[in-house]
Length: 86
Image 1: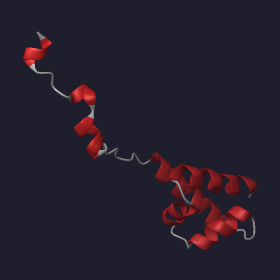
Image 2: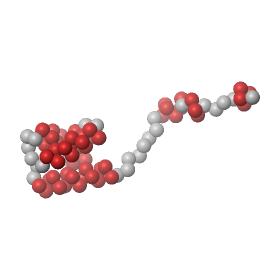
Image 3: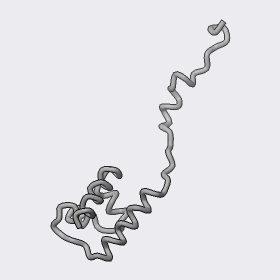
Image 4: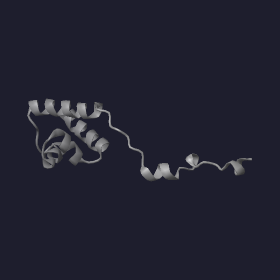
């Protein structure tokens, strides 16, 4: 059970918030908080299901979207005028 608590903590740090973990596990956020604190213990089947869902969430590739402003103002992408290059 200790490894499940560590898995939840790691998933929470990776995903950003316990709310994101709760969405992946399809449970109420208060349950994730209680499981991480060790106040409650999920049933064995819930632990296995949760581990599978977290593993699937980490295996699924996430699309990386570039920041819109960064590409517009990236100095390496600004074309150099031909007159200035000569």
